[in-house]
Each structure stands twice: as structure tokens, then as C-alpha cells.
Amino acid sequence: MFCWYQLSLLQSTVMKRALFLGRFQPYHKGHQSVVERIAKEVDEIIIAIGSAQWSHDLKNPFTAGERIMMITRALEDLPNVKYVLPIEDIQRNPLYVSHIVSLTPLFDVVYTNNPLVKELFSNAGFKVRSTPLAERHQYSGTYIRQQLLEDENWRGLVPEGVAHIIDEIDGVERYRRISHQDTAIPFPME
Ligand code: NAP
Image (cartoon, rainbow, N blue to C red):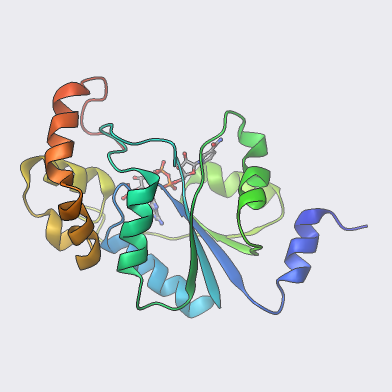
């Protein structure tokens, strides 16, 4: 008798489909190079936007909808990326994998560098692959958020389409306003 994780593995033997999970606050060129690498290894990619319920704070300035716009715009030339989906956090880590599975198309491999995410998906029987980000001193959400505050250097660190969305939503001004209100989280913050 198969458990449903094994069944999902069997069903996806024809089409190799990967899940790439992150907060993407904001989506940057480091994430983009990871997606381009994953695209060479699988047929389809699901990008899951974690912590979807959070926005308008120092660590999570952008809404899930805005992050969907950023990623969709940045990846419009990459046909392997078929789905970009928001996933809210839940209180109980042991249920997180089934929470994701219930909200996404079937997948058989997970790309992440987050130790907790690796642990949860490995325990559930999924293949997990590491995704080291290159040039972390600059391709880092924390660093880019700091640059947003100064309105300096951030444009070169995100795909052009993401910069357009940040301009469209007046993201720099919003982040400055948030930084004046939200003193609970000091820099540096992951
Ligand atoms: P994260 O906690 O948002 O990011 C942690 C660090 O890992 C950040 O410095 C991030 O950099 C970096 N990072 C992100 N993607 C990376 C990659 N591909 N390679 C190397 N480093 C990377 O974690 P996350 O992995 O981006 O996202 C995991 C999501 O799963 C979060 O939304 C988390 O809340 C969710 N989650 C929820 C539960 C639950 O609800 N119970 C349990 C586990 C995980 P950047 O800022 O530059 O991206």
C-alpha cells in the first residue's frame, strides 16, 4: 500500500516537476540564477512564495500578490516556470509539508537551502536538493532591503522586471515609511 507521498512520486515520473520555496522579499538575481539552474534539471518548476501572509514590515515589505507579480515578470521568458503560488505559514512544522502538498501541483523534488525545510521534506520522503546562492554579499534579501532604504544600488541586484514592479508600487517610499514605524526588528534581519 502506497502512502500519498509515494503516490505523488509515482505520478510524476513522466514529468519531472520541482518545488522552489522562498520568501522572496524581494525576488533578486541570486534567486533568478537558481531558477535558471533548476530549469536545466527539470521539466516544470513550481515557485512557492512562503510567509505569504506577511507584508508591510521590515523583514517582509511586499505582499504575496506583489511577489507574484515580481516573479512572473522576471521569469516570463522561462517557460519551465508554470506556477507561482502563495503559501501562508502555519503554526505546526510537522504539518507544513502536507499543507504545501495540499496547495500545489504534484512535485517530486524540492530545491531549498533552508535547514528546516530540508528536514521536513526529507522526512516526508521527497528528494531535496541544495541551492547555494552566488555572490551572497550583494544577492541577499537583507542587503537589498537595506539598499532600498537608501534608494541606492538595489536596481542592479534585482531583475529588470522586479525593479519595474517596485517602482510601480512605490516600494522605496513604502519601505522608508515602514522603517520609521517598525522599530521592533533592528537591522540586520534575515
Ligand atoms: P527564509 O527564512 O526566508 O530565508 C532564510 C535565509 O535563506 C535568507 O537569508 C535567504 O536569503 C536565504 N535563502 C533563500 N533562498 C535561498 C536559496 N535558494 N539558497 C540559499 N539561500 C537562500 O527561508 P526561505 O528558505 O527563503 O523560505 C522558506 C519559507 O518556508 C519561509 O517563508 C518560511 O516561513 C516557510 N516555512 C514555514 C513553516 C511553517 O509554516 N511551519 C515551516 C518551514 C518553513 P534571501 O533573503 O536573499 O532570499
